[in-house]
Image (cartoon, rainbow, N blue to C red; front, side, top):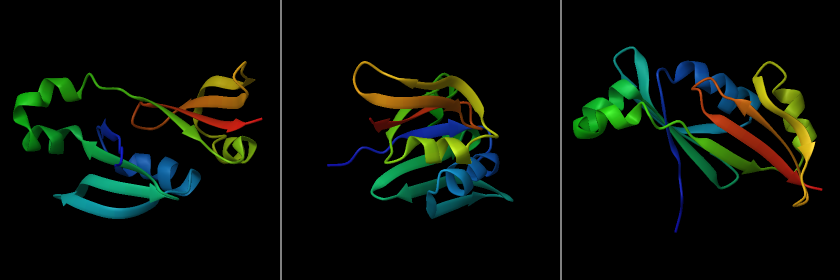
Length: 124
């Protein structure tokens, strides 16, 4: 019924500038882990992503602890206006410059603060 990626990161706080301030997601839930966040759920227009620290995940599922650090993700996010998103992300590392694809999309990819690659695309 629903697919929600969980991105494992060293620290959530640096990722919030990207996901909330620049991309426009809203924090819908958070779980503190001491003085920092251990887990958050972010949502925007029906899309959802979860961020969880390695430390929190290690406590949650110790048997999988070594796997969490190998799981970098590539997300493909379709948006209504890719140029508008690009303007908001000028300070983020671009790993694939804007391009037009043979399958009718205009897209570019960035590395978000947690190390994951996020491709933003709009139909041309």
